[in-house]
Amino acid sequence: MFNIIERIKKFYRPPSKPPKLLPEIPIATDLQTNLDMLQFLFHDSSDLTFKKMELKLNGGALEAAIVTMEGLVDKETLAASVTNPISLYHGIISSDSDIFKIMETDIITNCDHTAAKTIKDITKYIMSGFACVLIDGCDKALAVGVQGYSFRSVTEPETEVLQRGSREGFVEPIKVNLAMLRRRLKNTNLKFETMTIGDISQTDICLCYLTDKVSEKLLDGVKKRLENTHLETLFASGYLVTYLDTEGGRALFSGVGVTERPDTACAKICEGKIIILVDGTPSALFVPHIMVENFQTLDDYSERPYFAGLTRWLKYTSFVISTLLPGLYVAMAAHNPEFFPEQLLTRVATSVSKTPFSAFSEVLLFTFIYEIMREAGLRLPKTLGHAVSIIGGLVIGDTAVNAGFIGAPTLMIVALTVICSYVIPDLYVSVAVLRFLFIIFGGLWGLWGILLLFSVVTINICSKDSYEIPFLSPIAPLNLFELRDVVTRADWKTLNT
Image 1 (tube, rainbow, N blue to C red):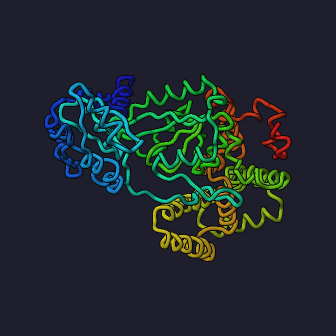
Image 2 (cartoon, rainbow, N blue to C red):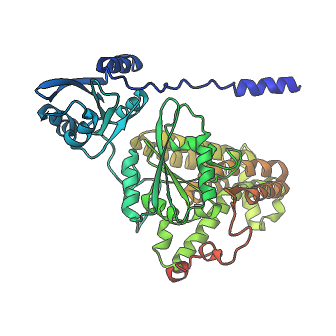
């Protein structure tokens, strides 16, 4: 038996192969040797471009080449900062002069430049939108920033809509996202620390934090986890969630937060958290992340305190309804009908008797159909997405009730549950899974099944932590002082202290 289990594990998780990393090949002094090496590494790819030029020195000419990737550079910036200065330069230098130093200080006018000492450095820079200048007889290359690739303009994020907040959201280029953070936090303690993850994709990520706020232990833990992410590709920030979460993907709720708003990210940084930005992804991760943050939005701190407190309780109530209501309905209808009021019991019994399915089957089937419609609405174009919602509301909903396929109470329970689940979109994934579990436990074992699963979920949440911070804090362990921003929302005079 144990041998079979080990074989299944090996089949599910095959042994990893060591990645093929580019060796640290130094730049040769012969120009043509370097160009041949780059052509060999890129397999003569059509987007790799070379522009050979002559650098006029001491009445003669020294051969040079500009290496770029097509589509990643701005041709006007390239001409103004690199090509024209080289072609127009006429200088007289001594035999012992450093030609690379002259190129760096006297010829290239662009302030965004750095030295590349290996072929690996050249490949990294040109694939990031730099132009690398190679000179015959020089064992270094000058990488000049002339990025010019197109990207989506800064717009309001669709998943985090605010009434009284900024209309800016993160975009795909990491440099633009860093600029939006820096513009909001004009503080010298704000530090951006870059890393590269992905043996194949070589994706840039950036850790953003305040040096005087962040915990050194937290920072070291996050860096260690990121260094141990042996990924071949990194195309979305969600790839890193499993590695950053202290419990991996086993917990019901994630200990890693996600935001698409620069102002929200800045607020998290000011709390001592660490923001992780991934190049090519319009969202940011932050750690640590606790449960109560799912119920907080930036609008809460722009509204009057009493209204923000009311909104908080509406969110808490919606979370309970969206998670427990279908399971409780099924448990009471199938096993414990005595808990229904007399008039309501009569209506539920009449409704169930007129349909071909039990209450358990009705709720489970209709919840499953809703998840199908939701997935279809997300993946289809917006124009067809409206059609899917109309079909779901009219045909599958009203027509199914009139045809006697499902009962009206079931339709109302599922509809109310769905509406409440959208009040807290950050918890939708966890709520959707828990909803199915509570329906199944309630249908099989009644209220005792609901109580059992509720106890398991509660223990799971209370035992979870995010970088040694209890996930349910400040509720468990109880901290009355911190409840001023949990149970209600105190005014800024109180919060500021």
